[in-house]
Length: 284
Length: 321
Image (cartoon, rainbow over all chains, first blue to last red):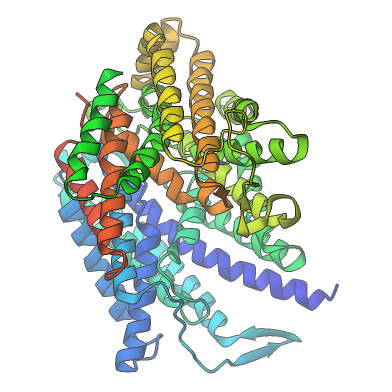
C-alpha cells in the first residue's frame, strides 16, 4: 500500500469531518435552543446545493462568490421555518413537524430540479503537496470549514449575543425572566442552523453532486455525531466528526465504501455504550 | 375490531366513486394494513420508549422529549430478509418462516435493548442511537451482494400459491391475512392493560416509576421486544406481498419515517395507527397517481403539508387526548 494514498485518504477524511462538523454545529444550535432534533436539516443542505447550482447555471456566478448570497437566503428560510411551522406548536409535535417539512421540501426539490444528478463543472486543478495531490476545491472547502468553525466559536463564546444564546440553552425560563426575548433567540438559532447547513452545501457542490436526497446521508451522520459528541456540545461534536469522518474515509479507500459507513457507525455504538452522555458529555 | 373493519369498508366505498378500478383500492388497503401492523406497537412504543428528559424541574420540560425508537426499520428489514433466507437456504415455508424471522428480530432487539438500557441510554440518546442500527444493517446488507443481493435487492422465487408459501395470485388473501394478523395483535395488546400503566409511568418519569417499584429494564425490554416482533411480521408481509425488497426499502429513512409518522398522526390509542394508516397511506397513493405523471414530486409536497396541518391542529394525534 502506497502511503501517499493513506495520507490522501486521511486528508479527505478531515474534509469530510469538516463538513460533518458544520452540519452537526447547525443541528446542535437548533437542539440546544429549541430542544428538537431537526429532521429537515439535510434538506436545507440540499437546498443550498441547488441554489448554488442555480446561481452558477442561470447567472454564471462562481460557486465561491455566491456563498454569502446562499447563506443569507438559507438564514431567512430557517427563520421562516421557525416562525411559520415550529414556533407555537406544542413541543411534542415540533420534531415531527420538521419531519413533515422534510417530505414537503424533498417534493419541492423534485418538482423544481427533477431527480437528475446536478454537477457544477469547474476546471479540476490539483496542488501537489510533497507528493500528495489535493484538489483545489477540496482545499478551499477545508479552509472554509476551518474558518467557519473558528468564527462560529468566537460568535458563540466571545460575543454578547452568543452569551444570550448560551443562557437560553442552559435555562430558557430563567433567561426569559432576565429579559431575554427567547422567541427571537429561537428564530435566530433556527436561522443560524440553516445557515450552517447552507454553508456546508455551498462548499460541497464543487466536489459533490446535487440530487433531492443529497443532504440525507450528511444529516444522518450529523444526528449520530450530535449524540456521539454529547448533545449540544460544540467541542465534542468536533471530536466526533473527526473520528467518524477519518474512519469513514480511510476504510472506504482501503476496503469498501459500504462497510466504511457501517464500521464508523459501529464505532459510534461502542463509544456511546462506554460513555452514554457522549464524548464530551459531563452530567448535562 | 369492528371499528377497523368498518373503516376499511368505508374507505372502499368512499373511493369507488372516484376510482372505479378495484385493484387500485386493494393496493391502498393492503399497503395501509402493512403499516398498520408494523405500527400497532407504536402507541405502546409511545407509552414506554418515549422517555422524558426528566432532569429539569421546570414543568414544561418534564414532557420535553419523548423520543421514538427510530430503529424500527431494522426489525422491518430483518423480518423481510430472513423470511427470504429461510426459504431459499433451509427450505422453510414462509408460513413458519415469518415467525422464525420474527424471533431473529427479537434476538436482535434484545441485544440492542439490553446494551442500551443496561448502559443507561435514555431519552433522545436512545432515540438517536437506535437510528444507527438500521443504518448499520443497511450498509452491511448492501456490502455483500453475493449473499444479500446488494443494492439490487432480492426477488421472491416463484412458488406455487398456497397457504404454506403464503404467496397468492390474487390480492384478497393478502388482505385477509394481514387483517387476521392485525386483529390478533390488537387483541393481544389489549390484554396488556395493566402493563400499560407501567409504561405510562415510565414515559412520564423514569426515576419516579423506578421508585414505586416498577422494573424499568423489564418493561422497557417488553415494549421494545413487542414492537420488534410486530414490525418484523410487517416486514415479512411486505416481502410476501410485493415480492421484492432492497436495503433502501428495508432499512431506509423512508420506512422509519412512514412508521413513525403514521403512529404520531394516529395518536396514542390502540386504533391510532390504524386510523393514521387509513388516512395517510391512501392519501399518499392517490396524490401520487394524480400528480406523479405531470408534476413529479407534487404529491410529496401536498402530503407533507397535509401532515403539517394535521400535526399543527391536533398535535396529540387524531385519537389522542
